Image (cartoon, rainbow, N blue to C red; front, top):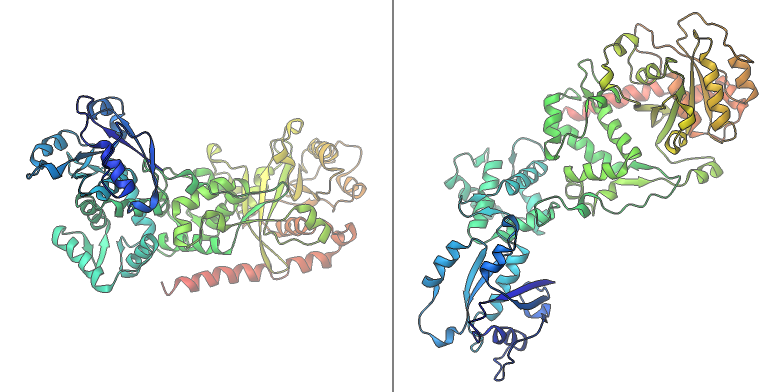
Length: 582
């Protein structure tokens, strides 16, 4: 509901304020007019914008402008009433006032007695509130304001589906249909481009609309009083009256019950693949720093820091690969789904994917207790928390998952270190994501997040006789009575093994507590470290109900890992094939 203030100096009584209101409501001139109409609500069906309007009386222009912030002035409509009593127009007198006060949106001459321009008056009043010129345009400079330019630039980039810097006919039609629910006729499309060509030398390129041409068109709309067109576009792309992205747009409702996780669904992955494709201009299946900046140019800030390059797979140049890119999105969705919704909002997911909101791209998995009861899961992302004392080899274990041997790991700067690593594994031929999280070694202060996982890794250094004891303490204090499967990792297995200072050997400890035997692991290799251990971890996370006897069986692990290499190679090859036609 809009609130309109009828403002006049107190000395100018009986100018027809009340008559205007009464005439609009009753659609006839009242013979008996009350001294003042009390607060009144005009029903939606008597105004063109179909919006109920609330009207009260108040004070005059100087008082309004003096008591409102310059950047958020209340829009004003100047009304010349009782035009039935004069034969001449008062517009020449009014124009200097309008020029002095930029917050005056328009001026209307009307007559309550003859019902002249009554409906139009309130239409302009509603339009001034619903589609204000102030946030969009600076009359003094005769140009759009910076915030408006920034918003429309993002809209252009989101709508430029192939990222070639122009909106071709297909993209313009999609944009038109998205914002106005109707495509442009081919002749209308050409007329639009001709207008731009005529006024702007670089407005059209390769028969498509450039960013400058797009901005010029909206400037033209505003200058010609068609600013509702620009507002329709802005609001469709999530902007509020202050030209900030609306919180309801960025954070749509999404309920995640306890013991449930969040994953991207198939449609969201397809959308993110298309975003990657449009920015991977050199088709090397990786994002260079320049390509990465271009991708995130529609964000108000850079969402990924240097640590991301040590969280996911990169190429030899340290650039995030296609697989690494999807992995990071998967990680964000799992750890902070609200942040993921926000990011998808900046990319325009709901608009480009034609979904109600970003929430349509998220799958909330069922309760893990149900998975355990049914002895199966539909989840695609599994979390492994990695515990170990200082220097046990936890960081090396995470980085090895990303294909980095010890020599590569030594080049990582401490300030760019990541406590997460995520990539894909294949279990029974199915692609799954394994998320490794290195937990801080002070086990007396473990948070709920440190304990909430699908599988636990207990890492000890075979060359340090005191390393194993830490693992036993963590296991006994937090996981001995839980249903979370645990795996013991004998790290740095390339070094001479030293007897652990503990009551029993690691192998005997695992037998007593029905765990698989310790798994030897090293990242001190010439090539990329072996990934077998990560397939085993994913398999155990997927099947927490599997018995100890099965875990000891080589046949079980062989079946789980069969086809992993084939599927990994095939997946990459298929992506390269899909890129070729582009």
